[in-house]
Length: 197
Image (cartoon, helix red, strand yellow):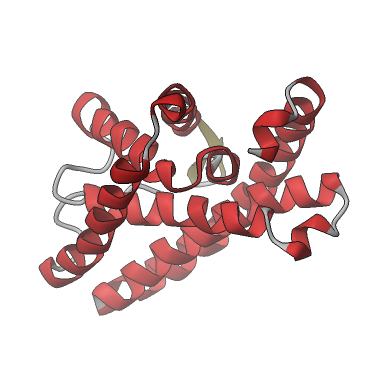
């Protein structure tokens, strides 16, 4: 789900990156000392999860666990994911430096949205298994939706690729939902306070 440097138009990159910069500044301003360790763990989770690629047909899928990260650290997701994206760009060649703001928007914004969904009245009425599945599924769904939308409206020649990317990632959404469900059920059983913070 990483967009490489030079793929998008300059206008798209600047506008989306500006939003990410504002959100990142807010996250840094609101970060408390006691949240730094959990934010660091979330960054490591994102880095490792998105590093493991699983072959699927003509492409590869990988976990991103945005929903889990979002409900754990909310707006600090922008900090955690920024650090992970920067390391991935510098060490592994994923994405790029110029496009890091766009990739940050695609990944961190869904995490924050899922945080608010998880703490909404609607989510509180759902069974834990369904709620935790939706946390993973919707996190990846939103990231894929943002990715395809940015590609679709950036250049006309990306229209087909955008639709294809969304179609391929449907299986990723389901896998994310299942993995997130089991992970969050385990966390709730062993350390429930972290989900209530």
